[in-house]
Length: 299
Ligand SMILES: Nc1ncnc2c1ncn2[C@@H]1O[C@H](COP(=O)(O)OP(=O)(O)OP(=O)(O)O)[C@@H](O)[C@H]1O
Ligand SMILES: [Mg+2]
Image: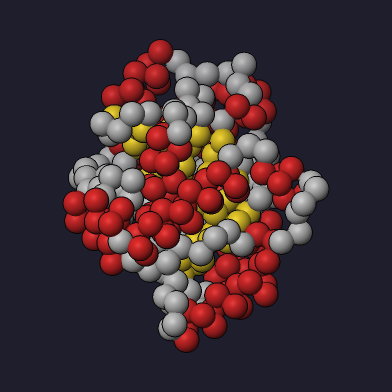
């Protein structure tokens, strides 16, 4: 029987573009794999950046799995507010049929990195999102149907784009949420907006952490915005990820931060690695509640 406590699902989301959501998601996923976790990187963003960042072309693999999961969730005659029928979900919650398991296997990209599988995104996700809205499928229902796909993994990392259906789906699936926040420009409003969506969905994920990104020491805008984040989200703020030219170059080589010599050789690159490592070890892995709320907390 499916036990939702078994799989960590880390969703990277913010209602703002260009804040390093994909960069963090991919590098957290690879870091977890390097720590011997079996990891699925699930790209729910039509831009397909997760694939590009790992050196692959965007393709329809995540949408194939989503369509497979949606098959039983599409009820053309259902009204928008009709409650979910629990019995309808029981069979799928227990596991995948042989046919579904094969469909998932065929869609998965084995990235060549030990322990890291990818379901890549593509523009087709936009059509899927429209279709789900037209057919009045609820993200919550699809989330239930998708969970068995995650069962073989220790951790699933989801990259998102701001939008209605897929972003909500990713939030509903999450056990922990990361809000990457670029310090280059002011995004407090977007952080609050995104947290309000998380609340409105009744999402149980904790913690919901804020990760400052693209930080440039000595630059007024960056420092002022970082201060604002510290004042507003002190209890959930993870170490700052600095701006690094070496990190910016990684996508052109299809390398993660853990594979790049340039990153290793640059001070800001190593600082970015350290911040992401701290995010993983101190905030995302099980036991963080004790760190946060137990003796010695209160940073
Ligand atoms: N620490 C960093 N230092 C320098 N550049 C970075 C860093 N992190 C991310 N970038 C660059 O910033 C840009 C935006 O990053 P990314 O694509 O991860 O953001 P995103 O929030 O996923 O964007 P989108 O909303 O388009 O999906 C990219 O060019 C990326 O290479
Ligand atoms: Mg992205």
